[in-house]
Image (cartoon, rainbow, N blue to C red):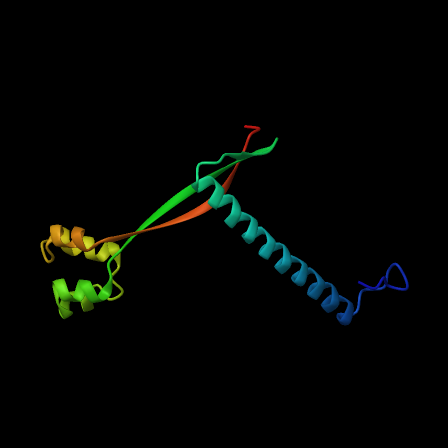
Length: 126
């Protein structure tokens, strides 16, 4: 950013935009590098490696989400049930199963559990 001529002079809109663009471009570059490093670290951790620094220990956190594929759900329970739960909301589908409107066992068989892994840094100074 261009320094103002006088210490009390406010930066111009051009100066602000230039600084904003510089920061945005820097952050985007850093985010790309961070994501690439995370992918490499995740792959290493998945294969059994351990990673830590003086301050952090890297771990993989696994999140699971149950979903019901719309086409299979409709094939098993019909159009009316598929429309009833619309986006196949897990909670709505399980509520219908609890109330007896859907077969709970068939719903369980239909479930697809999706896992995502995120890299977590655990501070060692706790």
